[in-house]
Amino acid sequence: MTEFDESERLIWAGRAAAYAASFARLCAWPVPKLLEAAEVGPDVRVLDVGTGPGTVAVAACSRGATVTAVDAEPSMVELARRAEPAADIQVAALPELPFDDGEFDAVVANFVLNHVGRPKKALAELRRVVRPNGWIALTIWAAPPAAGQALIGRALQAAGAVRPPHLPSLAPEDDFPRDEDGLTELLATAGLRDAACETLRWNHRASAEEWWSGPAAGVASVGQHVQSQPPGTRAEVKRHFDVFSSEFADADGVLSLPHAALLARARR
Image (cartoon, rainbow, N blue to C red; front, side, top):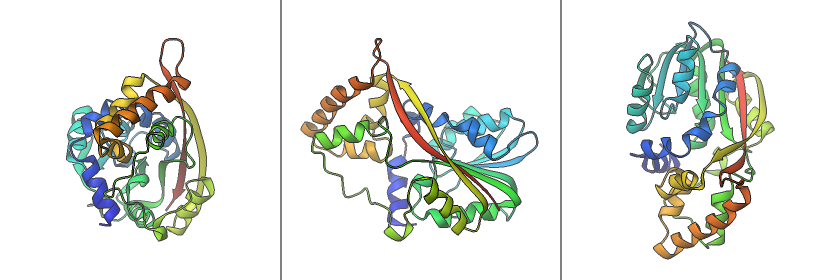
């Protein structure tokens, strides 16, 4: 594992419940489009990589697919098994999966490539486990981020929060542009064919309390950024969050947060 991978394991350890209560609804939005892109339907053998609380696994089972799912975090696997008993769900992580070559008809990965230290190597492993001509479909967050994605980052910057040293960035040779051309090229360089990518845009609706709860609990790198600050800085981050979030609030106080993600698919 790279330093980035090791950091991700620590970030997510034991945080399944906090994620499920905060960011999980956001990440569920592209799931129908993701499964359509991978052509998941009845009797399709599909692998859901990075299942989290099992959102994709549940949706794939509802389409009649035969579902195997993995996640690197045991607390996520526990939630996913409860959510979808019909799926085979186990602990495993990229870039080495415990499956045979060509074992699956389709592979999906919803917001997973954001969390691996060597994206090209991860894609090569997804390619290995899908059958010839099988589809791989994935989502990642687009960059630059949409206004809703940037909200908490704005609050951190306004409060003068310093990024903690235990949050490494990808090595330059492993990074890639988080736009349609960059992701399409990455798929092609991993040996995949017929690569295509589109940008998805939607407004995620959530209360300010729900949206703040994930970072406050240390969920994802942005949550680690918040939690690592001294108490006074954390209070300033929250104060700025309250001010900035009002820009997105409707008359009932519910936030409507613009988000943008990339949806890509390619064949082995």
